[in-house]
Image (cartoon, rainbow over all chains, first blue to last red; front, side):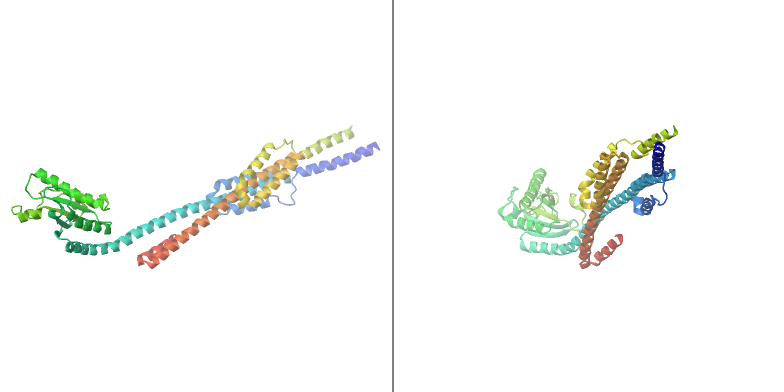
Length: 288
Length: 138
């Protein structure tokens, strides 16, 4: 009886032993790594993954290799299946990582592309728009000066190599020997300001001139102060200061003889220089 | 004598089977890692990758059960699986979000091209040739 019992017990333990070994041994009816391998191969074949997540792909490959090694060593199928699970997830993570990086890359490229398109559109607009109006501007600028001239007494317009020169007689603008604008200056200054408002691209130079009576120093100072007075008056009427420069040339640049009263009157003047295309900026800026 | 040896050997093997093929300590670190990964993935994955997040949570729950049974080997495996599943959830959520952003930005880019294309089509001939060169770079 006792022997029978121990024998039974021995059989039971024998069975347990078999189960235990079976549990730790590889049961090769079904490949527990088949799915992991298939997923890994699929992910590795994706060029986006090799490009954007090579490190993650290599990691997944490492996990799969470890699982394969365990399977070869005869590790338990549960353990191998577990490693296979980890390997498959690692491969899937590599794919998602690649997709995310590719998408971020696309966003960055799209942003760049948008910047490029906008810059191109801006450049195109800058090329296209001012060109046609500029032609129109040139046509009407001449017209406008003609109109201005017709409108104002004592306004002399002439073409010089530096552009159009509008000469305003001092008698209208200033009292003798003074640099304060007279009420009569209102109209020509106002019209000049209006011209400046209509042509936002226009930059002008105001030049003061005197006759040759009086000292050179006084003439230079007076002509400078008068040119600056005109400039200030334009600025007071809303013209941007940077568009108007002023300088006095004294009696250095006469337009008539200083020997007769009529000649001297012509020489006492304020000139507005409107540079034209073709007249270089340096010619405009340079003193005569 | 031979008979009395058998149960002893059997008990040892039975014990080894119960506690895994090797002696396994409780997988405290793996459990913590699983919880941390799920917590990390949760805000994003809740919306963008609910399925792997759900699996990760289920695995963690199973791992906790295994811990309660003192089946540490099983608990460790399940915790590790929960961890990678949560990592996958996070990766997928991030990729979904990035792809949505890419789709959005491409859409606005197309709209911009259409707008400028339409503008240059009504404009000069230079503008329309500009439009076709943009089409090539796409």
